[in-house]
Image (cartoon, rainbow, N blue to C red; front, side, top):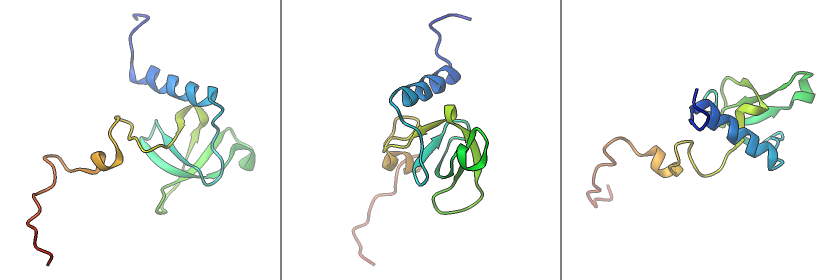
Length: 104
C-alpha cells in the first residue's frame, strides 16, 4: 500500500482523530454523524451510562436506534459528508422543477 494514498477509511479515521484532538466528545442530546452508517442521530446514551464503550443514537425524528464507537462519530455541522450544504444535499437529481409562479 502506498503511504500517501487516501482511502475512505483513512479519511474517516483522520476526521475522528481531528474531532478527538479538538476535544469534541458527544454529550446527551448532541447531533452526531456516524461515518460507519452514514447517518446523523441524537446521542441518547453515553458509554458511562451503559458500562460499554459505545454511544447510543436515535434518528432525530424518532425510530430505531443504534450504537457507534467514538472513532466513528463526528460533530454534526451544516455540511453533508460529501461537502454539500444540507440544502444542496436535499436537492433531487436534475434539480427542482421550475416554479410556475402560481400561488395555488
